[in-house]
Image (tube, rainbow, N blue to C red; front, side, top):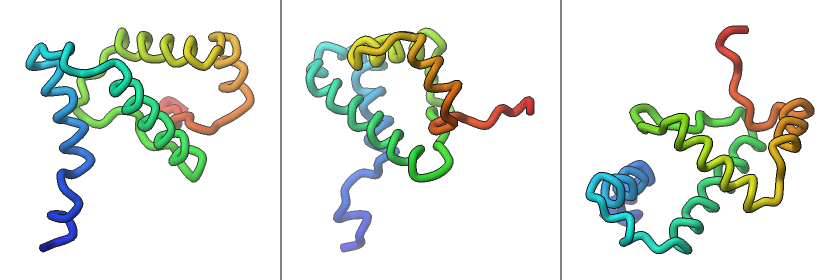
Length: 106
């Protein structure tokens, strides 16, 4: 048995399945809030670890379908959950480059 067969579905396949199963099939109620929160926290921690270890990965894969509204809702929820204000996020961005994407216009 190959290593990929032992490991099960790829990370990419699992990520796509989560969205397709819940949103596209209109089965949001099938996803427990605590489980969704755990997945969200895990992805945020993984992204932060990769960004701190080197150049930050792109936050969204191609064809992700993430809208500006999706981003604002997610950011607002994370800031509230962490007890942070938008001002503090602005201060962090002014003092740190960790997690920042290069500006294509510079």
